[in-house]
Length: 278
Length: 360
Figure 1 (cartoon, rainbow over the protein chains, first blue to last red):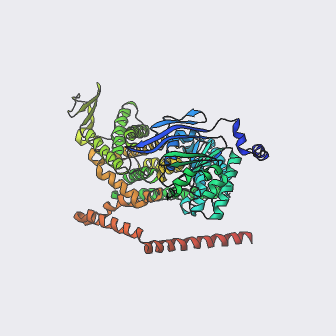
Figure 2: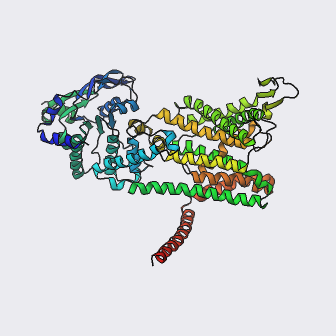
């Protein structure tokens, strides 16, 4: 949350230009996974720039969420490599990948329902603000210090979405849209380099979606992170993504800027089917 | 500011529980010293404290971590026999009763924690019903091992035997005597000592829950995949809870054993594990206050039902079912909520009146 950084971002007009000096945050090459005989994802190559907003689209069942599960090591890929900021994530667990810098939200919301909004964010801060179990039990000064720090940091993060007033509510009792926003805040709390959003606009009305688009940009500019999102709402995808990859039957069928994707005949075919030959 | 309020609200609730427990202790102590309570009740005081520790420690595993464990009595057994063994050895070195008991309880806790850690490693790969089955088996294994374990002490030192009783010199004595269990225990446990151990366990659990570690544990309970995705180490926290919970059960076991002259391994069988689970479920998963109350009442109940003689366990079961039905009935719940609300409003009125007087 360095204010100087935000200023720097605004002063630059062409956003992708910033990425040129930095190395890409994510490089997938020949990534693939098979479940028994079923090839779910095959030969998946994707590069995401350090502060890029990228989109992953495709028809239902194309394997988009599977790609997210591969990136976060919910599934271990059977082929290919994933480089995160130049570091190979081979053999890492979900927890280690998160520590290395990938945070995610879920298609079907996965919050800690019985805990409060603030506690949810504090759990996101687990590896950022540390206090040993022993000093917690003995209530040593470090406990009070870190608790205060976590409380302030949690409220600061919640204020991104103007949710600081909901801090005491149970996460499970929040309205749907707020639950989606809380998931993003919790993911941001883990201090990621790459944020994966799985259908962030699902179930939102057009005005909420417009607000979400604004917020996704704001998050990228403030935190200087890369965002990769899966979304079916084409207005959102075409509106904020700088690069888009289209997935069908586990394979990438097209890559490019929003304009290129919209004009691509293969993509149109995948979504709408082949034009009947006369 | 708001966050601070919630923190103090939970803390307030915890302080009410601890204060209530302390109050009950003082009242019972006065009644006991005054000779008002019967011998029957007096004999139950230490076991009640031990069962309360068992209930809150199991609640940590079942209610806070969200894993079903059916072998909690196994840890109690490890603590009881391990503690008595170390305590008896300690008697050879020191005459101080309290020192012997203290060393025994610590040893019981450490040994049980070790057992909890060991059982935790394979169990980590399991979830739900399968975990329950393995913990159940663990409890039975511990019982079977103690059943064939003989430990004797004489001038030559310790003699350990499995299945066969080791030969010891005439002036020596058996500490653990196979199926007969630990014999010749000096009655060192006192109500006050048991209460202090209980209070310490309660404070540790409360402090643990309201911390970074506690939040990580509850995150695992609410959604394991999400917890992993925010960088929480599942292995570490599951093992930690298993070890802490087992350590407390072990201490309870030592305190319990030192209340009797003889303790048989069958005392810590599957039925005991289920009994403790009933305390936890009846008191409410995650609610330490509920566990404490349920443990106290359900330990006393069979004693109070002695006049029903043969029908004792039948009445016990009926009472259990009625309580469960009652606490789940919305009408009865509303009724109790109303009463609590009325009492509260009376207090609040008094308070505001006092404040007004003070200001006026």
